[in-house]
Length: 90
Image 1 (cartoon, rainbow, N blue to C red):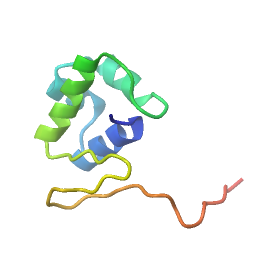
Image 2: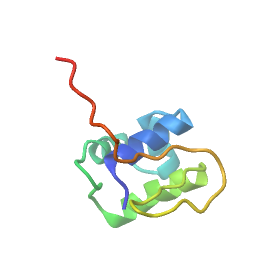
Image 3: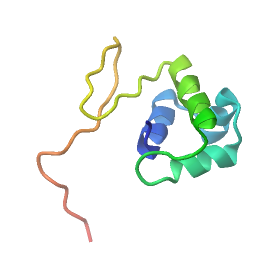
Image 4: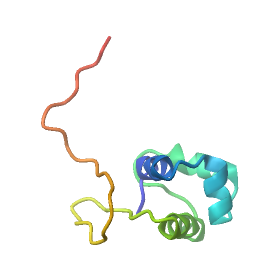
């Protein structure tokens, strides 16, 4: 499983745009756009999702599931539950 937020964060870590990710995965830009617009886990054709995950893996991205430790070496970031919820700036 991969979330839309993980996809956007992976692209940010790689410094690539949606077009580049689409080319790396062999899928269309609208497919990447739909995936990244998802709420929560990305839904779609399993084969297409696998292509995107494999492309990110080849580029050096380790997707870490919730409550799963990272087993690879290297730098990265991980989203966790904040100790304090941020307040809105309205």
